[in-house]
Image 1 (cartoon, helix red, strand yellow):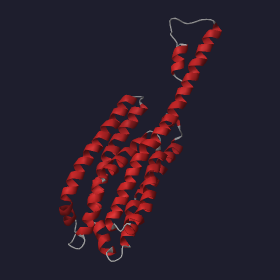
Image 2: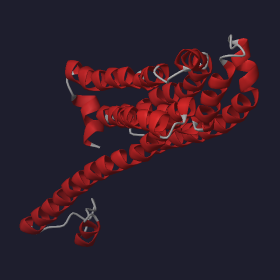
Image 3: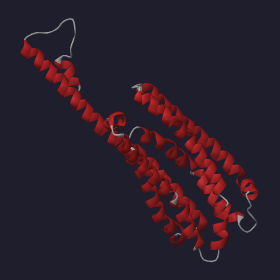
Image 4: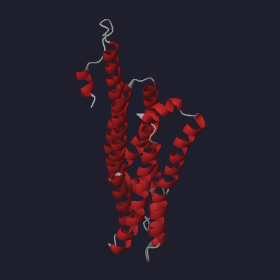
Length: 264
C-alpha cells in the first residue's frame, strides 16, 4: 500500500528509476535462460554442434510463447494501474483475475497445439534429419512446462504496476540462478543431454511461480499491517479527543471504541 502511495507522490525521476532499473535487469537476466542452455548444450561431447543447432530452431516457438505471456501482462497491467490510481481497487482486482484466467486458458491451448505440431513446426523452421531429434527433445519438455512461463511472465507486470518492481525482478533472478545450477547437473551428471537443459529451464520457471506469490504476499501483508496500524492509531486518537472535549457530535457519527478494536 505504501508503494501505491509513492506512485502518486514520488518524484518522477526517482519513481522512473525505481521501476525501470529492476525491469531492465529482469529482461537482461531473462536472456540467461537461453544463453546458459546453449553454452552447456554446445559442450555436450559428440553431439554439441548438432544439438545446439536443434535447440536454436526452437527459438521461434519460444518467442511465440513469450509473446502470448506478455499479451495478458502488457495489456492488463496499464489498465490495473489506471484503476488503482482512481482508487477503484475492486475493478483492478477483477482485471488481474481475468488476465490470470486468460493466461491459464492460453497456456493449455498452446501446450496442446505446440506439443502436437512440434515436428511440423520445427521442420518448417529448418530442422533436418540430423537436428530434428535434438530440437524435438528440447521443445516437447519445454512446451509441457510452458504454463509456468506464461504465468510468471504474464503476471510479473501486475506486480511491477503496484510499485513492487524489485519483487518482479527477484523472481526472474531466482529462476536464472536455479537454471545455471541445474543445467550442468541434468546435462552431464544425470546424462540427460538436451532434455536436461529443457528440464532445468522448466523447473526454474516452476520455482519462480512459487516464489512470485510468496514474495508479493509477505510484502503486501507488511504494507497492509502498516496501514491498519496507522488507521487504528488515528481512530483511537480521535476517540480520546472527543472524550477530552467532553462532547460527542451526534450529527457526524464517529468510530466507536469497538470499531477501533476491530482494526487490531
